Amino acid sequence: MNARGEILKAADKLFGKVGFDAATTREIAELSGVNKALIHYHFKSKEELFEKVLDRYYERLNETLQKASEKEGAWRDRMRRLIDVYVDFLAKNLNFSRIVQRESSGGKHLDRISGHLVPMFERTVELLNEAYPRSRNSALAAHHLLVSFYGMIVTYFTYNSVLARLIKRNPLSGKEIESRKRHLHLMLDLVEKGLREEQAGKRVER
Image 1 (cartoon, rainbow, N blue to C red):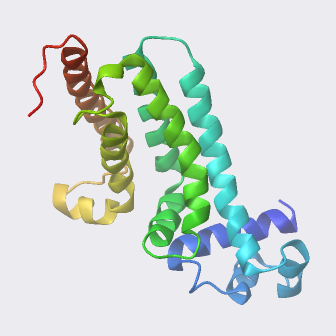
Image 2: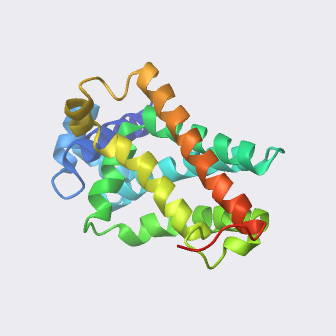
């Protein structure tokens, strides 16, 4: 790996561990094994370095979700694929969850995170609305469902240390990750049942 790659790797690790504000270019230089001046040669500032780390994650995530959503199949199958690839991505990129959690709780890069999330969110809302147009203004509206599933997926990784104590097992083990996917599939099935009933005019708003 070249110097630029080592710097990004070290920055990723440190930003995930202590956050943007607490991380210093000196520590990143020490962790990457390069001269501090080399960081400023490749990146104008710590800000630019952080943005590059964040952008790389979202570019990979967006590509992953895009490929999953473009595959043909029934609505339920497409949504299952989106859930599965999202879970797998977060399981393989724990620092990403930590970085986003910190920045979403009052960090200075909230606008950048929103800029990445909005297009993905809007595409999935559109997918749901096309399949179940009658749910647009109900309690099963697409934006509510996406927020709920986002919470069910993301919090599993951002609070994995707490969950380990609650469930008394490693939530990040392969077995537990697969179990989590099955649970999310079941939640999706229950939601789809409600959407189908609503689309058929059988569901009464509570």
